[in-house]
Image 1 (cartoon, protein in one colour):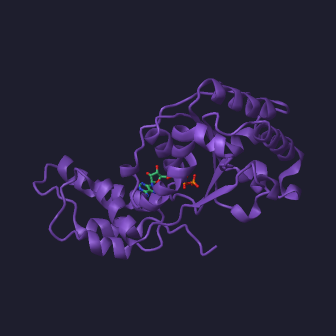
Image 2: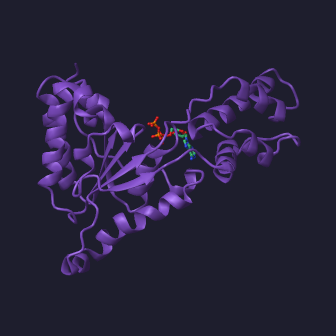
Length: 266
Ligand code: ATP
């Protein structure tokens, strides 16, 4: 087990424009974050119940973490991130203390986002998590319940396994807003490829539309990896003093063959 490390607030630099295909996801946060921030008084006066927590769900490597960071960046919020697995690995008692500390730090640092990554590690259906997970989950639920919305602290969580989550987490007043962050579609894939190859010199045979169509089914993280790997042969050629150091279509093909597709139909 690990001891409680200091809990840090960050100021993420990720912007929506760094995330290929983020347009539709971005819109989901206008209400959940912008309204409470700008119109808290009105919302309170009208007695409107805003979602307390937002759950981001979708396959691995498809920009859930980037999304949480972009939310913090867009609305100029402090950011506290903690991983479920990290909480579980702590000494007995420390995990609960960490959860409470995350909330109290966030209140001090408001306006602030708390991001619980891999929430399924602590909040899976009761039989599979064990007592350790259950204790942490109970602490988390207590903190969320004792916590007034509209205090400029926003709670985000991410999971690859939404169906295995303990239903208690999804009840009203907890993670009651759900945002699907799915695999990139063709437009998003093209954006990711363009973002990742920005600055590289590309040969004439490199066609972004073809690549975007060809990379159907790969995650954002895998596409980034493929594009990064595609640039390596060009670097090698440059280091050998060769004249033509452009990244070619063949380089993308080789890179694609070397990266495994991880997303499964579930
Ligand atoms: P996990 O569930 O594995 O934690 P995640 O959904 O949180 O994954 P991120 O950590 O946000 O995924 O993404 C991993 C990496 O993949 C990013 O750091 C980035 O390099 C790349 N990536 C994924 N999706 C995109 C995207 N849409 N645009 C640009 N880069 C992306």
